[in-house]
Image (cartoon, rainbow, N blue to C red):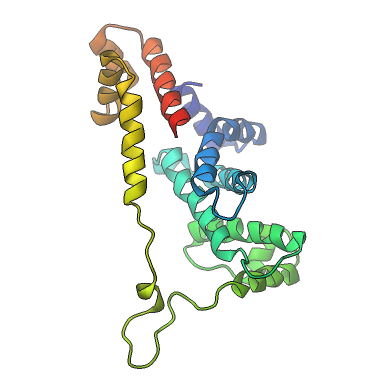
Length: 241
């Protein structure tokens, strides 16, 4: 589906909130859930579970998306999906073997909490979580208790008397330089296999910020040609990721 068609469907969905349209858009943007799930897979949670969590978060992101704010949907959704998955890792008990129902509620808790924070900019109450998760308050409390069971200390907890700072300042940090190196290597490998024309169109589109129509006029080709080529190039990057 072309970018223009996607934008048109998003605008129509923002106006109508039609469930069928939402489901169609979910299918178009599921690649975001795939990327996020692959990023965090192999860290104690199966890819399929992470994909399910990210997919549910994608639905929530679509339901909250407001076209009037002028934010591109992918820019709005990607941080939300990553936030939900990170919250799930944070809340997931690593100490106790949880019943399946509690584990499922932990997933719901991560999604509901992230959605509420995005909308209200504050932590939700148990009652508010209960409504969003569609479970009794007792099950919310049970999930919260299971989440806290693996948290020996709060990262904001002050150190012992006589020590300055907070606990998180003493912890190791995840080094993102490796991710940047891997990303740069991937980009270089994909770009190397592109023709000069393909690289030129990518530069005009994403570096100079030109529209497909503007590029087509400059190169003397149809906009449809640019659109097809752009989808082809994006698919290459998606497969590399």
